[in-house]
Length: 346
Image (tube, rainbow, N blue to C red; front, top):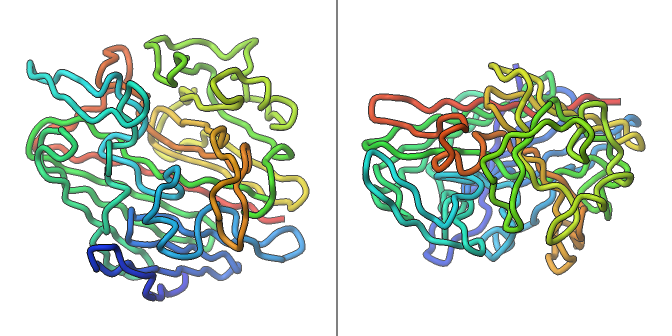
């Protein structure tokens, strides 16, 4: 069994609603900290090869950092994570218009999205369950959606995340966690010495605005071939874009329940993180737009490429791409998304 869950105050929203923090510990000196604002991963503390623990996620020490403007650090992104082209889609013969909050496109659920609300929370044994009810019409989406995310920290050093959702009307849905990782510790300046492996033989190319084009292309012979493990310092600055670095969806080669899809290793600390999921894709993002202006935990300045995200998901803009996996949830169905981040020590 994992350790007990402790609960503490973590500030209030401007409207006066309390934000709580939940602290989960296991028998191996691994600690997971969650906050009810955005159902957010606030910290993951993991020992290195010498037994010294460090927080391996980027974020903030207080609620003020999360309540202010920031690039989705550790939050639950939804109702639809990633981009929707021009903030529009058609479903069952009706067209819907969403807010465009990322250039010409809709990103991570819109102007507020699931990440900017206090979720209801409960401790259930050694797990923490967060629940949010998204109203019919919220951000322009159809249907009242009841979303739940349950976090558990196991003695196998797994951060286990179970997502579920139901709806009253047909709606697209794509939930994910947007944690930024740095396995050397969140105050280290770059991820250049990390080795990243992604078990994907195809990826979905994007245009200049980061939107998928609808193509599904082989990674062979491209900068997106990460199947053998690549040191980021040898590759990341060569990846083209408005800012250099990775920000692409990778198509998991053999999708299935609890399928290993990615691995990150930091040789200096000895820490390794393995990602497993039942989703068909994973977005690999190397914090290309961080610029040192955010004051992070312990006074850290988060610069370009100071962290990375591995966001398990349905392919971006699937609602507008009929050749992509289905992202529509209908009444009577239950959306189920399972992801684990496992930390291998030493």
